[in-house]
Image 1 (cartoon, rainbow, N blue to C red):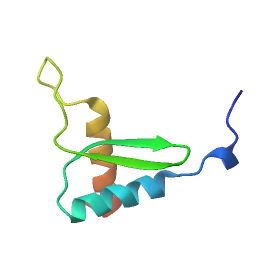
Image 2: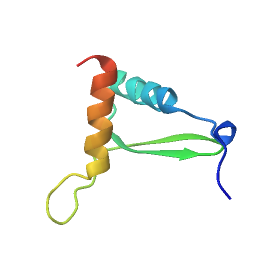
Image 3: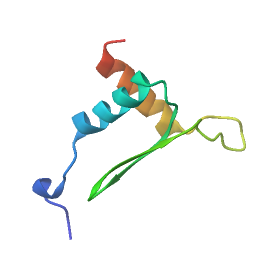
Length: 71
């Protein structure tokens, strides 16, 4: 079964607002979970994998949040 667009309760703008709110309070974002009933923000430093690299999704989220803020 595929999801129809109306089934999606959150969009990119909602997630970016959540990121901006966390950054305004200087909270380090570890993870954002998008669930049908809400968004969940997990704060804390991102966990590095065994090779010492940051998770690529964390890098993507940081890049796109910075672009949204006009940096």
